[in-house]
Each structure stands twice: as C-alpha cells, then as structure tokens.
Length: 200
Image 1 (tube, rainbow, N blue to C red):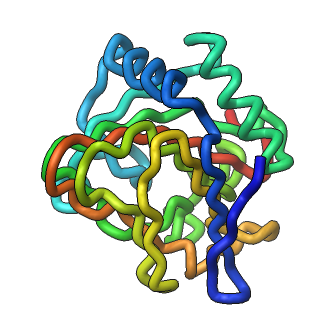
Image 2 (image 1 turned 180 degrees about the vertical axis):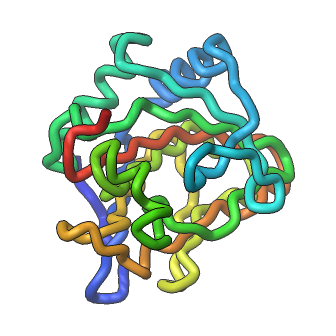
Image 3 (image 1 turned 45 degrees about the vertical axis):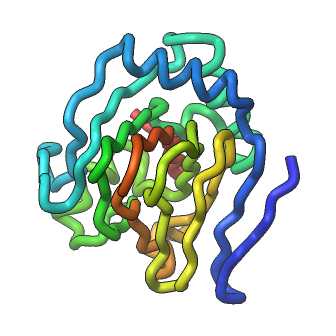
C-alpha cells in the first residue's frame, strides 16, 4: 500500500487510498446496521457518556469474531502500524446523519493522572488512530486538523493514519482533530485505535 503524507514538517498524517474496496466498505456498513447502532458517547473519566454538544453520531462496535472482513481490517491495521492485533480496540463503525459532527478533540486522554487512569489500565493511551472512510456520497464531513490547517477529504475506502501520543505516552498537540458537520447526505467511517501495550 502506498501512503501519502501531509503535515508541518515535524508531524504527519498518512493517507492510504483503497485501503478497503467499495464492496468491503459496504459490507462493514451492513454489518454495523445488523449489529445495531447506538448514540455515540464521549470517552470520559470513569464512565462513557453522551454529549450532544460535542458530537452527533451513532456507533457500533464489531469484535474480531464478527466476520472474516473485520479480522482482515485488524490484520491490515497491524501491518501498517507495526503493532500487534492484541494492542487494538475492536473495530468502531460510526454513522453521521445529516447535521452530524464531532467537535475537535484528542483521541487520547489529555487530562491529569486521575482522569487518565482508566485508559492507562486498559493498555495505555490511544497511541495511533486509523480512520477508514466507508462512503463519500455526501457533502461536508471532512476530518479537520485545526492546529495543522489540514483537512482530509473522504474517499470511499481511504484510510487516514495519525499519532495521538509519542512512544512515551505524551500527547502530541498536532493530533487535535474533528469531524466537520455533514451538510448533505450521511457519512460512514470506521475507526481502529492502537495502544502501546496489549488492550484489555
């Protein structure tokens, strides 16, 4: 797979076209609908919670046992990041209806030791994010990195990869990102998060 990098010279976002085929993207969307989607939550301090001021979307989680395709995504993610599958969270599928959005945020914990203790116990902070765009027949919905002035445009099957922390678990400020509002149509993505240690 060939990756295209964009960044500020010290931090880069990598884009891989055709990470998944259109047919595979469609299958993941169907599988998520069958599994059932619920309103997306914000990863909080002690319990996850819905925060409609910060995001509006619907989520399904697909473990490896779901299908051969989910296992393929896990394998490809391990290949491109260099971290074993045991360091990955389950595949998260997210549906943004028209008007859906996710305000800029960090994928890793950006609070103090007490706030981050739950995530640390599960395998450390989210180190790497892999976003795969499952469709592109909508308007808006770009992934924006405001500290870099970079916007990633959705393309069906394309993956975007970026680092939220360094290898010492220190937050990388340039990873601040969000999902722009969907102005027409519906957006689907799936996410893989990779930790520095095995995720439990």
